[in-house]
Image 1 (cartoon, helix red, strand yellow):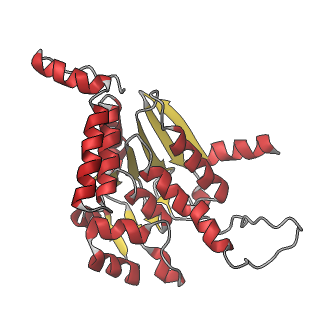
Image 2 (cartoon, helix red, strand yellow):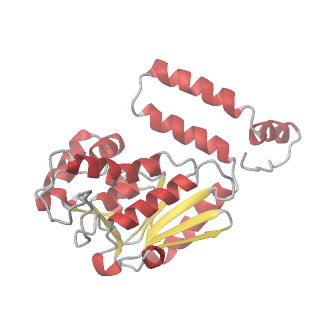
Image 3 (cartoon, one colour):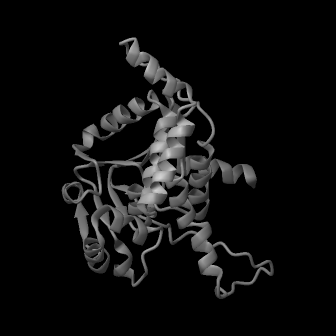
Length: 278
C-alpha cells in the first residue's frame, strides 16, 4: 500500500535535479493541478529537504500542461481526519484550524523558510492557494497566458494559505481587498504591473527564462542568498531597530563563509569569484 501511494505521489509531483536546480512539477491536470493532502505534504517535505545541504542551490516549481499552474486544493480528494472509529463524522471544533496550520499554511511557510531561492514558473491559471504558492516564492515568472485568481469569494470562503499576509505586503491593502472581494481574474500583464510577478514572457519562453534565472542562482553565493531571503522576509514584520540587529548578525555570520571571503579576495585580485555555495 505504501509503495503504491509513493508511486502515485511521484506521478503527481514530478521531481528532478539538473545543474544544482530542483525542478518540481505539479501534475494533476484532470483536477486543474489541484493539490491533494498527500501532494501538499510531499511538497512540504521537498522544500524542507533543501535546507542544510549544498547539492541543490535553487528550485523551480511549475505546473504540468499549458492550462494550469495550480488551482488550489483538490476538493475531490478524501478529507484527512484523525477519527479511529471508521465513522464519517462532522469536523469537531478546532479540527479545521489544525488542518489549516498543518496544511496550506505549512506549505507556504515551507516555501518562505526554504533556504534556497524558489522560482514559480506560472504556466497557466494560479487560483486560491495555487496563487499564494506563487506569491510566496522568491521570484515569479509568468507566461503571458497565465492568470491569477483570488477565487475564495466566488465560493463564499475565507482566503487561506497566508494570502492575507503576503498580498498586502506585495501590492498594498486596498488593492488586496479589491482582488479578494471581487475574485476577478488577473492577467499576467496586470500581475506584472501590480508587482505580483517579476517577468511576463511568451509561453514558449517560460521554461527558458526560469532555467536562466535558476541556474544563475544555483551558481551564485548560496549563503548570501539564504541570509538575504531571511532578512527580507523578517523585514515585513519587525521594526527598524530589530531589523538592524538581524542585519548585523546576518553580516557577522556570513562573513565566516567561504563565498564571503572569496568575494573579497576576487575583488582584490580583479578576477571573477568562484562561488562554492558555502
